[in-house]
Length: 312
Image 1: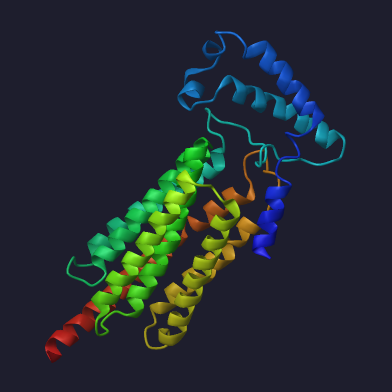
Image 2: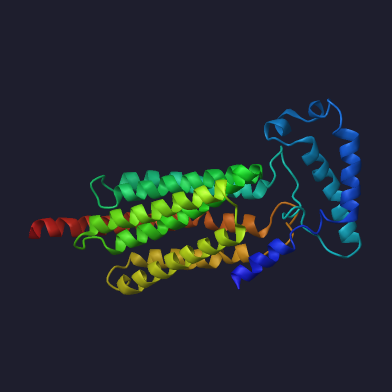
């Protein structure tokens, strides 16, 4: 169902820019403003810094009278070049999604500082949590940059950043499941190399072969489902014996619920707030819940480690 909706969205993504009104306005604007040597000097410095070209400016300014025409004709707001119309702010293409991406980034930075205060460096998964934080911060940084300015490079980095978070969460689950088991370090190395090589291969094909939106969405959904299912089973197994595990269960359930915002698709409220931006807003506080679980889980594993050392 999710895959079908995304495919459908991509098929119907460019009704606005294919309209005759938009095309006529764009051709006239390009002819009047983008044919001479003075075209770059007409743009503000911040727009040039964000690589808004004269052609991009024409597309932006021709979009709004076309939107108004669609509304007056009772056709409804349509997408342009696969995106809903957004009002720019200081050259930022999607202000709300940009702000909420920053909130997610800040959440990880704040919580890793709390983690470092409450967990000893000798505790199991201390480094793993830091690697997780770095992966997430890197992903949310590119999410911020992408929503500031959507070009091919920032789009790919946003997709790969999100995918890296999903893959690392799967790796984290596999290693946590095998913690304190015989040959756990060998399994950890194997899973790390396998997932790492696959991510490098996928990144290479995305950059240099083809940006396949359908395939990229499919693998994100597949690994995301594995991640949610795996952690859910783990929580069901241990939540009675370890009360703190309920935090993990709540996090997993909320992640699954907030993902519904990605399936929803509607014109942005006030030309700023769309379903994707709301999804980023909804995920921002979840970092607090997840790191609280990681702190308690590290304390539990530290106790397990001490017990094993005593037995040895």
